[in-house]
Length: 264
Image (spheres, rainbow, N blue to C red):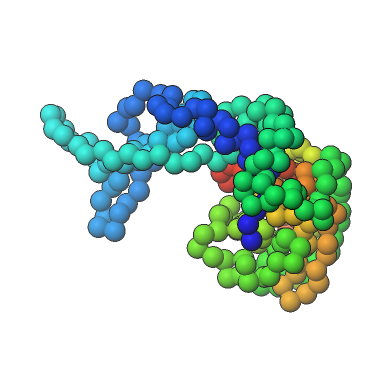
C-alpha cells in the first residue's frame, strides 16, 4: 500500500534539496559513537554525524581498536537519509508549504486527485477512551482499518521495536504485562505530545505511519474496536505505551517519525 504524502514529506524534500552537497557536518574525529561485533568476533567502530542543515547522517566504520603508534586504518563512509523528526527546522518549513506545492507533490507521487475523500480530517482535539481488552498470548494490536493481522504477526524482520511495541507502517503490536486475561487500557488521542505519565512502571515509544488516519484496536482472536479518526489525519504518529500491573495507557499524537526511545 503506497503511503499518501503529508506536508511534512514535502517540507523534508525541500530541506534536503536545498542543502545539497557538501553537507555541514561537524569536524570528523576518529572516535566511535557506537560499536558492533562482526561474525568473526572483531570489533567494528561506528561514528554517526548529522548534517547541521538537513540532518543527513554520515556513517563512518572502521575495524577497532585503533593501532598503537604510527599506522594506517581504513575508514569506510556512507550517507543515510535522516528520519523526518531529525531534520532541523522541519516544523517551520512545513508551515511554509503552500497548497499548490502540496498538490504538485501529491500528483508527482501518484495521487493526482489529492488526498482521498475518506481519509481522516485534521481534528486538533484530545479524546480519551477506556477499554477492557481480552488479552491472549500477551499481545494486542493497533491497525489501519482493513489491515490484516498477518502484517504484524509474526513480527516481520523489518519491524521497528521498542521492547513493549513492534511496528511496521500501518500496524503496531503491543506487549502488556499479562499473558491471558482482561486488561484495562486507556487510549488518549492528542493533537500534541501530552508528556509521559511516570506513574506507570514501564514506558516505551516509537513512530508508526498510518495510511488513512482511521485505525482499530484488535484483540488476538477477539473483538475489533474502531477508534475515532486520528487527530492529525493520515501520516506519522508517535505511540507511547505505558504498562503497569493495574493496566496500561497508550498515547498517540501526530509527529514526524524519529527513533524509538524509553522515557526515564
